[in-house]
Length: 336
Image (cartoon, rainbow, N blue to C red):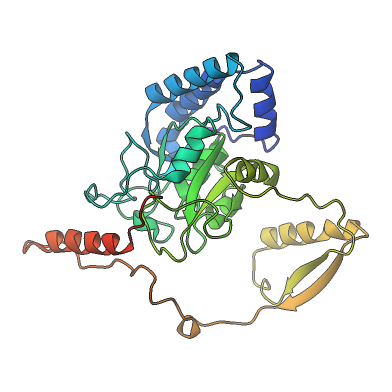
């Protein structure tokens, strides 16, 4: 089976123009995405929950609004996939866990409200690791990287479902959460642009927390241009475009990648050689300093990691659930 990885040339700005000119409708586009999900997601496993009926109804309503002369912006009519940890009214939020967490899940937050006001269609929720910890989940299968239909390759984590959904062409773009690389890592492994903005750009209300001081919502897109469009459309400050690269210096790491495989070494050399063709750019070498985990200090106010023994016959499963709920409540963010 070959997976329909979308070309990087298919950008949000192009789709928005086609929608505005009547060359495409949100309903037809949403139906195409839903058909791709139904056909290929059995193999890829990107989505945890899909509500196609609701998505098509919303898309049709948005087409009617546009036909009446109302334009909600560049994201109007675009399907967006959301990580399981982001609450959406009418959809389950499990935070990647098999536990019943309904009593500690916050209601729909301001990010989803902004997406709705921008005219986005939300077809469903994507898989992620339990409580956004790590890159693999022992509770359910890890989504498959769509770039290889022969070998099951890792997609990264914890927002792996959103990355796979975007790369496979199941949505126009997707949101995940990033505490220590959970957007950036799967974006890199799935050939996408993962954008982790500054803290607070996208409000965390309605998002199951890992560490409230470090959690950040971020986007998966097929280009930097798309990331800018989403950032500006959802309330970010306008991004000033650099008109010239003259005087820009790039850092070239040395001594860190001496033991990588030959194909990776060739790819790295090719990527580093491209800027050298631009006479306005210059390189500056730097060396990594090794840092041990023991020397790294973490904030004491961060949400404590969740750990417990395996369930046993003496009710330890109930104690584990109670412990996780108390920790979740301690880290729960109010909806704003």
